[in-house]
Image (tube, rainbow, N blue to C red; front, top):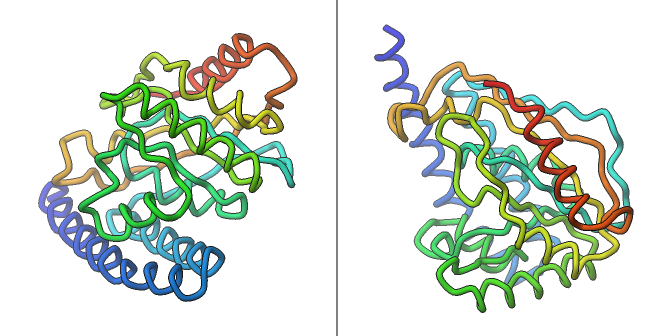
Length: 244
């Protein structure tokens, strides 16, 4: 019975998801071209709220735990483990006041209604992992924009998603560049749990009744310690809170 239900609810989830990204694509274009960044940002926020809500269709819950206040008036670098694409909308909605922008692979910059448009024109950065020169140049420019506008950068240093919840080795290069060109930033470690269970059996059917949990750890000033110590502390903080 549960298997049949998972198939039915997954179909409904994907239908709603598809309708939303198709509907919001022209809305994003219109608000950005006619009214500018602020209107476009509000449109994207609403989209992420709606996309996050589609998870409830499959019985998933979304809970953020945060004990420490986030600093205001400074850029943030949100560093997280990565288990599935279903984490993006909840993170975007939760951190919406800090204008989250994502470090994404270049392939996502085309072909996906709403998502590709926002990644290309909303302030995020698309990197070509096969072209180190392009990646480094794009990340440096991105970090400078984060620093200038007091936005937040979201980066998944594992590079690829963990399929079983076990964290992979964190790559040092992306975070190092972000901290170099956004020296006034605070790094915010975030641990994600259970997201992988949504796609444990692939994209279809999705797991149902999964409790997605996000733990937001204490922010760390970039200039408070040497980068190697910062990197080690961030990686350990995130991984030590992963539950399987």
